[in-house]
Structures are given as structure tokens and as C-alpha cells.
Image (tube, rainbow, N blue to C red):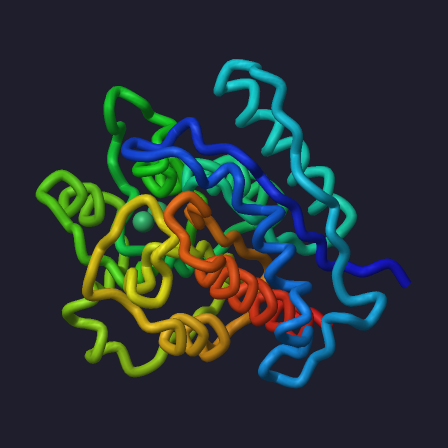
Length: 270
Ligand code: MN
Ligand code: MN
């Protein structure tokens, strides 16, 4: 049987507002995943080294096309994967890539619940005059009107504009300062999880463009991803920036999250 879970890299960082570098992330996350320093067992006990669980399709190639075209390319690539009932985990790239990826998912599913883990709400109508900015994907996603719930966890940079956007789109936001009030999460629709590595405290994951102290521990992030009630059907892991990393430690964090996400999708859709 062919593996039903696909992994792709989306090496794109041109829509980053502050620093580039995340386009180099996908191969380093793969390298960390297969590092001999660890193994391929998820915490649930699934051996990701077994044939038939997941398959790496490599990176989407970009060739200097204009942004609208490269976003179309991402959406088409993802759509083709989802068309044959396969599940997808994407490795960024900056967070702008989540918009075309989610757009394709929303075509494939009637509706979705989205769990978005991030230091930032990414709800800017536009940033630096760029509607495709990595600070804007969830504004684009919510404008489709096709999302059942957007639940954000880990936010600690909320400004007036994004607060207004969150109210407009009825986003359920759990800011970092209020996170202890969130006892459990449960979803009724299929769940897509978008993980921005900068949700984690820079102490745990220094390889990100935007250091936002006061964030999640790696343990907390894993527990949110594996602990909610519902069915996980797809995910992305974005914003790992190798330029800022030390000893590939953030690559290892991204690889760990990748492993847990693949295992959860496998268990939920078996
Ligand atoms: Mn983000
Ligand atoms: Mn972020």
C-alpha cells in the first residue's frame, strides 16, 4: 500500500517582513529527522521508519516566477496531492505559504477547523504593502468564509489592527498570557494545524526570524498538537530559520514536531 501521508518542502521566504533564511529549512529538518542521534518513534509508539506510513515528495521548485504565480503553483501542487485522498504535512518556508496550502485544503474539505500555533496572529490585511506577507495568511484564509473555527495559541504580539481583524473574523485567540485558562481543546470539524516555530520561546527554538520571549515550551507545543480532541487531517511547520540556529537545535525541534504530527495524522485517519 502506498503511504497516505505526504511531506513536502516549500522553500520560500520572499514574503518575510524582517529577515529571510527560512527557505533553507526543509532539507535541514529532514536531516534532523533522520539524525542517528535519535530514532523515528513518535511518543505514541509509532515507528515512522516503517514503509507505508509516510512519503517525502521533496521540495516544490520555484524558478523566479512572480509571487501570484508561485502561490498558484503551491496551491495546484497541494490540490493534486489531496485529490487522491492523501494527507499532507508541509515544511516552510515562511508563514506566507500557509495561505495557498490552506486554500487547497479548503477546496478539498467542506470546511475545516484550524489550530494555529504562533507568537503572532498573522491577521494583517497587508504588511509593507504586501497582501501575501507572512504576517497576513490568516486574513486571506478567513476572507474565504469557509473556515469553521480559527483557534490561535501562543500569541504575544497583539496590536490594535490585528485585534480588530481578530474580532472581525471571530478568531478564538488564546494569548500566551491567558494560556493557563485553556484547559482543553476540542474540535467538531476536521482539523488543520499550522505551526509557526516562533510560537516556542526562543530559549527552546532560537532558529527563527522573530525572537518573541515569553513563549511556549517544546513540551507545551507537543501537548497541544497531540492532546486536542478531534481529527487532524493536515499540518504545516513554518518559519524555522537556519541562519539563526545554534547546533541545529531548532531543526531538531521542528523534526520532533514533524514526527508527532505525522503520527497523529496517521492515528486519526487510519
Ligand atoms: Mn506566523
Ligand atoms: Mn510568528
